[in-house]
Length: 110
Image 1 (cartoon, helix red, strand yellow):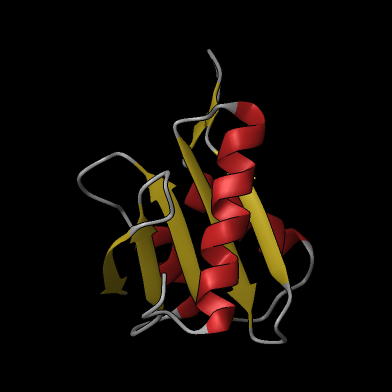
Image 2 (image 1 turned 120 degrees about the vertical axis):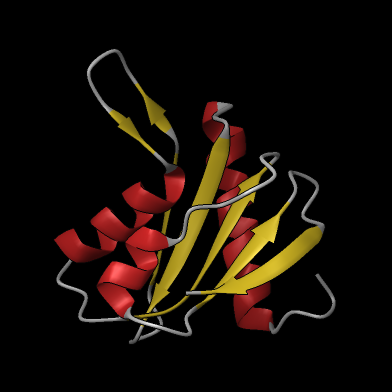
């Protein structure tokens, strides 16, 4: 995480913690335009399925957030759907993709 800013490294740490607490497939964290953070994990029930990133964005929205600055997702999956961030926050929002160890695999932009 040394190439990340301290703020983005914090998002990875929060996403790792959310994933570890529940042993979920993914953990995610988002930072809003005021600097507040929201962390979430994958929800996989019989009737509801949300990615960790979808839930983190939903939590931010439920808190009245007007925009996002960045996001991070911790997953072993090869690809990442960032559409929820793009639809809410617009283009060019960085989304850090990291492994469970915290190793950053990629930074994609919406």
